[in-house]
Image (cartoon, rainbow, N blue to C red):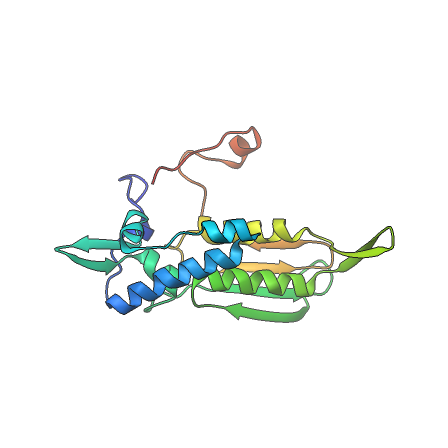
Length: 203
């Protein structure tokens, strides 16, 4: 229904969630702080701009009605506020099947915190090797950290929040699997994806 009417769940008013001006200001500040943390160098850090209410409205995080701002589902997802529960479940398994659990964790709260916690969890539980360059030793993960972070971010960004399932990250002896709830967009199939067909979803 949402796809057919070109509407988006995340930009829909979050029923039953009330927020204050202080809540909005706190989110703006938190988003800027997170952007600074994600910056790779000083130049990028200095280029991070302030996040204001107008920006939140344009992103569909707030809806303005009669001069007052109301939260959308995107606000609830970002902040972990209200009864809207999303989580990222992580587990380590012995061997190449899910028969034997070694460890498990579940992270909830603001979505960017889930992403960072899940990322650090994976790094703690995959193998770390080393390369010798000249007289220096360089630690090297068996999976590039940038690729791991990108996969977790994609799972959070592209999952279906209409589905009440959770993102699942499974670490096996021979692979890393990341699963997010949802389905392919209308008109897309696995066969068409393999042929290089992509579908742009307007926002």
